[in-house]
Length: 304
Image 1: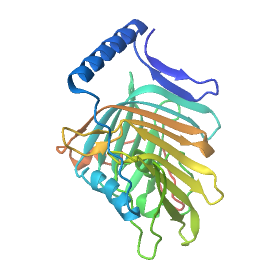
Image 2: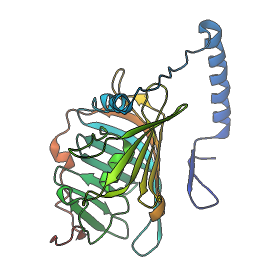
Image 3: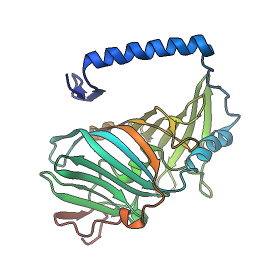
Image 4: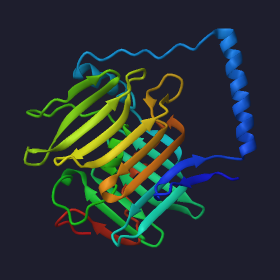
């Protein structure tokens, strides 16, 4: 039995299944034996501390102090699967592809999805523009400007780079703008949530963002839920497997499962390695001006 993505009966992407069953059983037995030996020698492992934040300011500081340490380019090497419906309503899937994700604060992103033929899709952004291109069949690039985000668009991207950055939790949580509303901390036993009122361009409430925080170390986000003003879920991200970058770097999630229910889209990302790449030049995040396929700007009134 070889590795691959299991498909659920409803067509959703299931869990990643690894190598031969015999090897898995052997690993489990060895792991159990080693764990038992360690318990005999050292006793029970210490439990992670659970200390409830006093208020929303302390909860926000716990997250941002950690994410603020991502102060230079970082690279993820991962396996990724996407599922979405294209403009013609066709179900499109990229299952179990190799991926390289490069991020540099505050919003530079290059997320390459590879097949045996090379890079087949890319999500990207720099200081001015963000974009998505897909090579197989479609051979098209969509792009928009950061300073026009939230304004009228001719095309709505199903998975926009801005949404992707929020789901990946690589940048600090935003503090309230001048005159804006501060997040509210809701605590119910070990369920700690920062609740943001999302405001539209007119300053009126347009929905809510819930960020469920781990009640134990490292106290980082476990879920991000975006709701529209009518309560419908626009995005639901699950984050788990937190580990440091390097021996004493910031904690980042190693497993992401993100759903966009209204668009019937989902993404699963399993990070196998995360490391800092301070030597990366800014050109790595440059807009693909050499693109030879179809180009479609998504901002209203923008020329190709």
